[in-house]
Image (cartoon, rainbow, N blue to C red; front, side, top):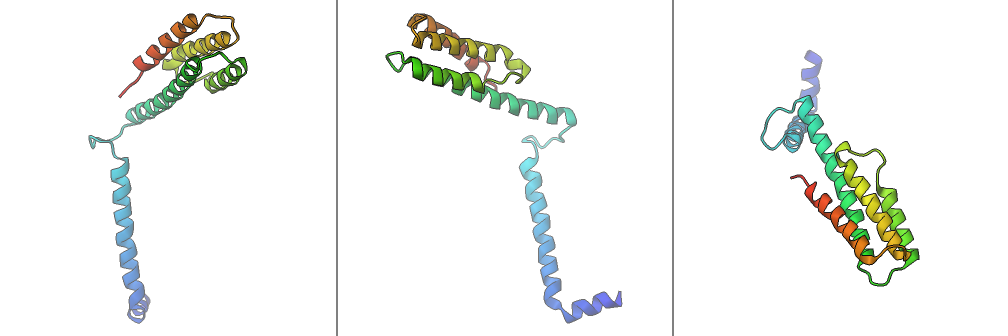
Length: 149
């Protein structure tokens, strides 16, 4: 104990730095706690944590599906059908659709895949514009209805 007192007596700056570092550490821990505490300030149970993570994954996947539908919509409204562009865009959309995503979005993934095939068929001349548009519009309505707050 005597050695510690002697050390701090001989190095007063070290003690000050130690105190400031301790205070900064506590402020950092408080800041992290506030950043990760739920909005209502409630204790986060394991079930609530799981729900929060599932909602985040759902929202991310839904955003990806909406982006794919928007890409198909742009292609459909670009004017003349271009089979090369149609192939590239629809392949990209189909590639982004997860085979095993959130189970609540299964129907949405299937609808987007069907819309991509319909738009591809339109660009290749195998489907009428109105039919492809109807399928895509139904998909977009389904995706809009799936949005959560």
